[in-house]
Every structure is written in structure tokens, then in C-alpha cells.
Length: 172
Image (tube, rainbow, N blue to C red):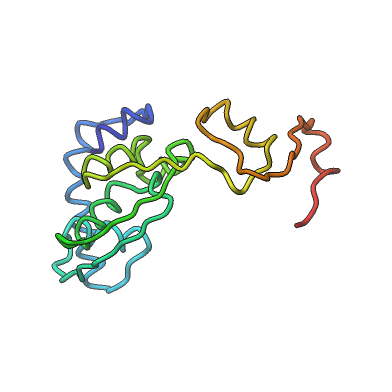
């Protein structure tokens, strides 16, 4: 996983051959500190139970709804697997074109991984209900399947020079 992240982000890691074998010790130390001090942060709340670092019984949910699934990290996906029972109904909603959380461990193909791991059925939702027609037309450069909602306002897309931004910005 670490080697994959280094390659994906094109990181220069000095002494990689020394550092990578030490990472499991660092994680183990982090688990020990979390158990002793009983203090964890948001990331710990996901990776500790997802990788069974803590021997805690997890409640099995009958239904799980997950929005912004394109931004799930490997640990978050593993946590969902752990809390889903055999009869669980799981609904993931996401848009691969909006994946922005690579810095926190999400992969650019998280939705594809979810489809494979959960044997999910894909149901495209190409209609955009929150943007005007002009905005959707601009977005189609990146997501050609996107469609404006029936009755959407015409809207407007225009280029703004950086030097004019401060004069244009408004609250609301």
C-alpha cells in the first residue's frame, strides 16, 4: 500500500528501503498509545476498527447508506465491509468525476473498487438538478453523460480575470 502511494503521488522518499519496513512498528506504536491514552482522532476512528487493530465487537447494520463514495479510503471501505452483515443492503452514491480526496487515501477508482468488492449494481444518475443549463454544458467537457434537469434555468458561464475577482465576490 505504501509503495503504491509513493508511486501514485510521485514522492521522493529518501532511505525508502529503511523507512518502509519500519512503518508497521509505527502503526503498532500508534495503536498502543491510542489504547493506553484512550484518545483517538477522526482518522483513527476509521482505520483502527477497519483493520481490526482494536478487538472490538462491531454492530452489523441491515442497511448502510454512503454518500460521496468516490472519496472513500481503503480503510473506510474496509470498515463498511466490517459493519455490513450478510443480509445488509448497501447503497453507495458517488461520482467518479468528483473524486478529490486522494490526499486522505481515496483512490481515483474507488467506485470501481466498490462495485467489485460489494458486487454492486451501477445505476447512473446523469441528470444534474443543482446547476443551470450553461453550467451543465460546461461540465460536459469533463463528464459528457451529464444532462441538465428539465426546467433548469439557462444560467451563464463566463471567464473572470483574477484582478477582477475581489470586485465581483459577494456573500450568499
